[in-house]
Image (cartoon, rainbow over all chains, first blue to last red; front, side, top):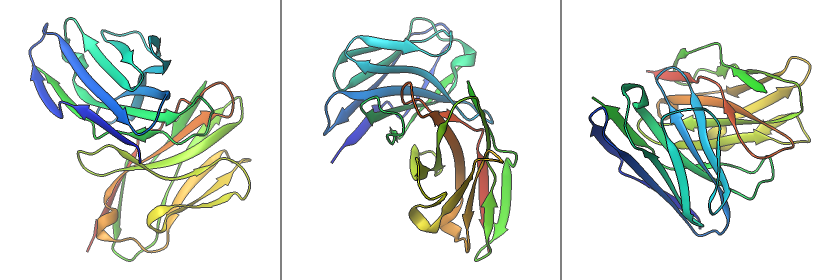
Length: 114
Length: 114
């Protein structure tokens, strides 16, 4: 069976510090990978998605970046965090690019920027 | 572009009562529709999805939803709720072509009371 892991689960970072959130998927190959952010009262916003190693699409302009160094590894980064980067970050995966395939979510990472 | 509206941010209901969570969408192209559930401090879990065929879709935990193309709605229903159904529910859509990226509504908090 397939599983998705992301870490750390929670972190508190000062403004201006760097960020690295990691996500790995097991039990499948060549998945689509996604980073979503959930802010209070605003639903989920797609930040990045990737269809393969080194292939990253950004959905919204922001202070964050993503990388996919390996087939099943997806990393969300920032060089300098802003207060507005606080939120709940969710990694997700789906099989292939066909629309309608179920997207499976990780447990999420709570980021508080202080 | 697509948009999803969940007009009810909170829905309180007594245990064993029926519930309906409303979802309306806007899109210039055909879409697939999804409902996800999020328990506190966890990721999202798929409840059900509509791709094609019968407009009444049955999902996990006794939930069902009906796709109404003319009203651009995909309301979620359960005939008798349980305390364990207390969670946040998200409606989402993705275009039937052009990749697999979900656009979410802002969510509805279902609170089941004794």
